[in-house]
Length: 134
Image (cartoon, rainbow, N blue to C red; front, side, top):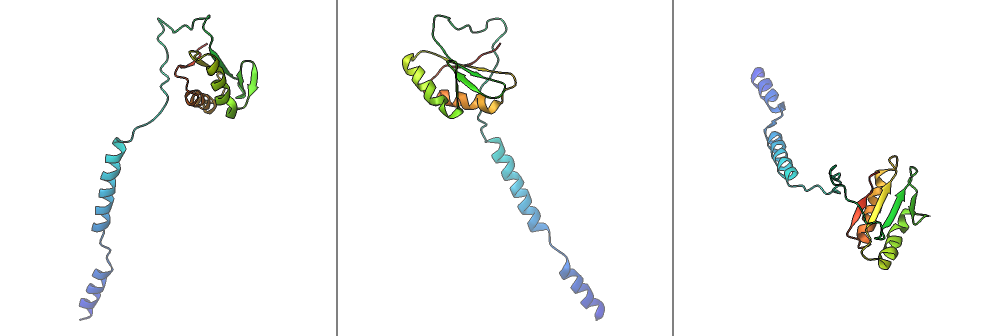
């Protein structure tokens, strides 16, 4: 009688892992399916072809934004804050709507500043935003 009670007690103490495994596999399938449909957003920075680089007409005025190694931004020779980039580009683009914005970053400048300038130029309504390659 004691053996039967001990066997029943041991059987009750085992954890049934089947429902947990079912949930894990369903979650795995869900994550695999949703991961394939996520669209990654980024800036297309394909380098120009070596044979024919795009040359800007020197007679055509352009808006040049320089970024120093210490992430200082210059437009027209004036140091400006990253929050004032959009307003400056809007003002210069209003004077010359066809002018492209050329971002000239220093190799040691951070990508965050470059992206902030790129976004500010796009928000200012400029369609032609370029990166200078020295």
